[in-house]
Image (tube, rainbow over all chains, first blue to last red; front, side, top):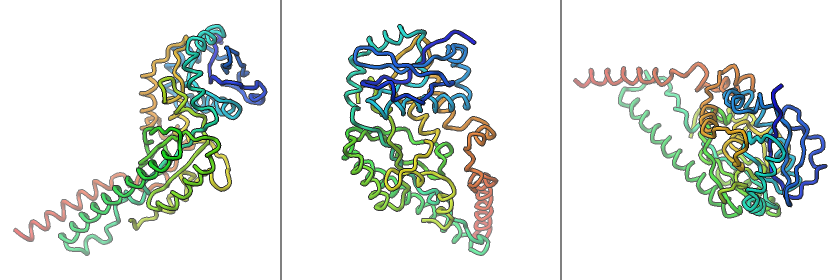
Length: 254
Length: 114
């Protein structure tokens, strides 16, 4: 065991400590809430062997560690966000002791308070638009030998044109979906489209949108997404949420 | 738009059609890609006492996105859908084949005309 340190998951405002009952921190650590002015820092103890500079450098190269830590971090943030306005920290925000955590909150108080004000009563929704995997597939050239060479080449060319047209239509659909949802959201961010191999879906991701939506508008937002799914059958639309406002509780402004 | 079985591909794994806030909300674990998008790229950045090189983290996310991790590791994590994807399983040299086929055709055509 190395020296202990404090891992900071999130900063909340008005978090009842009971909201975290039954939730554990990373490595099963006990969650604690440190009050600073009207804010609460949610922390647990971690081992510097694992979360010190050397440990982190090595661990961040290990996909299994990254996944476990990312999911553990997210679980705590989710629990907080379900109970109070929550500003999630970036992964692996580690201080040596409680005093140091309190100092950070005091130092950044105005920005944190502003960020929390921005997301209070709102949630983040993820909407992604994919091109159907089939659209990218080369149509099977049935018995190419049966065709004349010129006909074969013409067919290849028209398949390429079809694919380009399909891509243009799908991109236009993604833009239309984004425009619609931006109209219903308080704010929107475009995340980088995910690699199809990681996203677990064969089609190219054309939109990876994050939308900040008023809680009172949740129904109209998700209802609109359902309508868009029906309106644009040529693309796949996925909606996930609500997420804690990761993409919007930032210090650099909306 | 397509002759191949796109719909079957979609049905084979939970994915874009899987979750949805409308209708019955059956929470499923968020995809690792979605979690990483947020915990690595977003959230409040406050420098703690432990200096993490964010550039390293960005590089890491790129690495993860490109799935540099071994296939075994990915399968362990349940990322194994490519096994059902003809594009990726055993037909990766299709382009090369197609290229050869095209070249052959072009040669035949040239031979016929000239």
